[in-house]
Amino acid sequence: MIIIQALLLAIAANLASGRVWSPITWPFCYPLINGTVVGIILGDPLLGLMAGATINLAYIGWISAGGTMPSNIGIAGVYGTAITILAKAAPDLAITLAIPIGLLGVLLWNLQMTLNVFWVHRLDTNAEKGELGKVFFNAWLFPQLTALVINGTPAFILMFLGGDFFNRLLGQIPLSFVNALSIAGNLLPALGVAMLLNYLGKKKMIPFFVIGFFLTTFLDLSIIAIAILGACIAVIVYYANTKKEIEEYSDSIEEASKIELNIRLHRSDLIKHWLIGLGAEVGYNYERMQASGNVLAMLPVIKRLYKEPEEIKAALKRYLVFFNTEPSFIGNIIPGICASLEEERANGADISDEMINGLRSGLMGPLAGVGDSLVGGIIYPILVSIGCALALKGNFSGPILFFLVFSGIMMVLGYNLYNMGYKQGSKSVMNILGEGSGSITRLTDAFGILGLMVIGAMGAQKVLVYVPLQINIGQTAVVLQSVLDGLMPNLLPFGLIIGTWLLLKRKVSPVLVVLILMLIGIIGYYIGILGLIA
Image 1 (tube, helix red, strand yellow):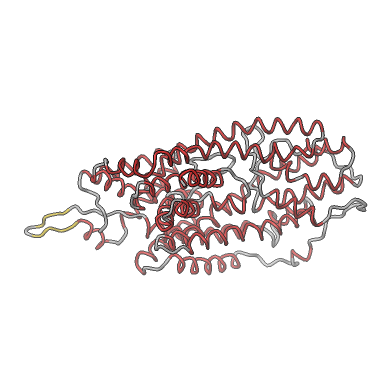
Image 2 (tube, rainbow, N blue to C red):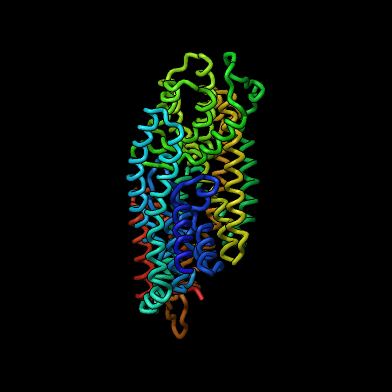
């Protein structure tokens, strides 16, 4: 039984950090999802749900852009939750256990990214020989086995040590220190809120964060109520800022002219290309980033269009160059364009390797910026705030709702953008990023408002600061917290979030901010300034 649990825990850790296939593994990397699954594996689903949601609060502003990873959120969620369950600890301790695990998990990520360089060089050999049948092994299978060993090894160590070990270990920690860690855990969500505020916080939009925070504080509105209100405001702002076009922009979009196609891609080829491309990061490596996943996704296209060995070799080599963008939402338009260009090239069009890769390289940065902003700054924090709010009430619909909606948006948006890229070629990018009705700029700003209002509400509910210090006035002892609440409820949590945000704006490392918050919580408890909320 222990071996089976260890193996399942190892698979969960790999799914949370291995980047296998985005519709599954992207939402699974968040502790709200993987913590619940770990709870099911270890026989305590409710504690896994609560611990995972608690951990996720510190990572609401977590964004991994350009291959960088400030903390390994997947490893933090899986192993932070596992230790919490094995030690039979309270859910509010999970966050303080997970934070250092996430930082150590970056070492596992670095090792994985480094070792995957070996497999991409094996792909070079496959391309040189035109070995289509061997691409799968070096692009997908071997990198995933590597990731499974790296990310899954701690699972066997944890299960070997066993629950009694962690229970005894936790039992040896003085109760006062456990209380201090719990207080520090109540402060750490301020970092997640502040990171998102720092990411989305245009000066003109900060008031919407304040509105969300104090609507929840004074009116006790739920996260869902704030989300509905924020969505209404976002729609109003979007249409208010939309200039009336002289001609309907969408009517002016025409398919780019193509040469006569004698060799055509089948619809099944395009669907396979798109679906496999959602696993673009499967062989992610420091040398060429998403090259392994890209060449694997191109196989259906290459097999359909090219029959001569030299043409096959050249096509494989075209997609084994450095490439890195947001691959699952907005970035889907690039493989759609590539499929269109490859189809024309196979029919005799004058399209060179340099043209294809020049276009890919030119688009990957702008589309990564749009994609990371849309997903990391808007879609993820809004959905995970709602999911965590439900989960912390013991409602399993929280992770289920988050998973279905997040992956659903990814699939619908990604499929439509892939088809736009294929049908319109490079012109389709201008329809999205340009000034016409397809422009995403106004939409991003509008839904930034929604994101800030929701994250403001989350900050008001989940950043907890309680000051039990008493002030003697004559014969009367006044609790300082009551005085602060009389001035303004939630004043200290608001001040803590803003203070954390200002530190981030001054380029203070998030790791250092974590240490500062933990020290404030621990020292504040021992000197009697901070206390547990009854």
